[in-house]
Image (cartoon, rainbow, N blue to C red; front, top):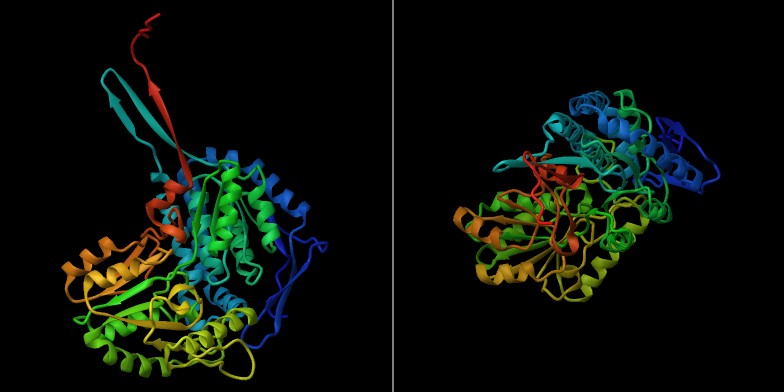
Amino acid sequence: MRAQPAASHFVDGAFREDTAGPVIRSVYPADGSVIAEIHGATPAVLDAALSAAVRAQPDWAARRPVERGRVLLRAAEILRARNAELAELETLDTGKPIAETLVADAASGAEALEYFGGIAAAITGQTIPLGNDFAYTLREPFGVCAGIGAWNYPIQIACWKAAPALACGNALVFKPSELTPLSALALAEALAQAGLPAGLFSVVQGDGAVGAALVGDPRVAKVSLTGSVATGRKVYTTTAEGLRPATMELGGKSPLIVFDDADLEDAVSGAILGNFYSAGQICSNGTRVFVQDGIREAFLARLKARAEAIRLGDPLDPATQMGPLASAAQTERVLGFIERARAAGARLVTGGTRRGSEGCFVSPTVFADVTDAMEIAQEEVFGPVMAVLGFSCETEVIARANASPYGLAAGVFTRDLARAHRVVARLQAGTCWINSYNITPVEMPFGGVKASGLGRENGWAAVEHWTRVKSVHVGLGSVDAPY
C-alpha cells in the first residue's frame, strides 16, 4: 500500500486508531490497486473528537484574531512546502493527473488558509449611532462545527471549510469522503505543526452513517456540506430539526452559453474546462453547452478536434491531461448515461467509450442535437460528458438555461459585454463567468441557488456563514419607563 497514513483518524491533536471500525480501502482508480486501508470512526472516536472540540474552542475564540491568523498563515506555508508530496497523494487517492493536483488541490487549499489567515483580524462588528445612545454588533463564532467533504477535491474542500471556520474562532470536526480519505489527515497534521491547539481540527473517517451521527450530534452548532443534492436534503432535514444553521454546496447542471459573436477558440476552451478538467468531476461544470445556430457546426468541429487530442493515461505522468474517474461505480454510472443518451437520439460527436483494459478511464465525450427533455440535459452526470444544444436568440436561451432545478453556476461567451452583463443578471445561478469558466479564486464567493445549495464559501461572504451576529444596545442616559 503506497499511501498508508499513520492512523485512520486525527483527533485532539494526534493520529488515532480504532480497529473496531469497519475497514475502508482507498483504491487508485488508474489500476484498481489498494493504496491504503483505514477504519471508519466508531462512536468512541466521534465522541472523542467532539469532546475535544468542545473543550478547545472557547480558548481559541478568546484569542486575538491576529493570533488565529498566524496559525493559518504558517499552515499555508507548510502546505506549499509539501505541495509535491501532497499532489502525489491526491493523485493516488482521486486518480486526477499530477499536472492538475500540483496546481489545483493543496496549492489552492494553501491560498484559502492564507486568505482567511490574512483577514482574521479584520473580522469585526459595527457601531450604530442612535442619537444619545448607540449600539454595536459582535461577530461571534458558532462554537463546534461539522464539515462533510466530497471526493472530487478532498484537500481543497477541507481547506475551504477549515480556513474560515478557524479564522472565525470555531472548532471543526471534518469527515472526508470515504472514497478519498487521505489528504484531510495531511491537512490536520499541517495545522498541528503550524501551532493549532489540539482539538480544534479533527478528522474522522467513515461513510454516510458516520456523517449522519456527526451532523445529528447536539454538540454541533453548524454544519457545512459539500455533496449531492440527496445528501443535502438529509443533512438539511437533520439541522432543521435542531434549528441549527447549515451551508451546502451541492450539485448542478450548469448552462454555458456561446453566442455567435464569441471568440470561437476561447469558447471551445471554456467548454473543455467546464466539462473535461478533472475528468468532468466538478460540481460547477457547464455541462449544458448552448451554442447559437450561426456557429454551432464550427464550434462542434473545433471541439471534436481538441477533445480527441486530450491525452489520457497514467495520472502520475506529467504529460497526462486527463485521468480516470474516481471509482468503478462512478465509471459504470457515467457509461450508463452515455448509452441512454445514444438511445434517446443524441448525436455522438466523439468519445462515448471506456478507454483501456484496466482502471476507470472514459474518453472525453461530446453529444450534439441534445434536447432539453433528454436525461443528459437534465441530470448531473459527473463525468467527461458534454451536451451541446442549439439556440437562436437571447430571450430563448435564458429561459431554457433557467429551466432547471439547479442553480450552481453559469457562463457566457460573447464579445458584446453589454449583452454578457444583461444575460448573467437574468441567469438563476449563484456563480457566473463571462468569457471564462470554472475559475474559483478564494477571494470570490462560491455557491449556488435553488437545489444547488445554501450559503457561500470563500471571500468575505464566507465569514457571514461561519459567525453569528450579536447586537448590543448601550444606553447613555436615564431610563424612561412609562410605569
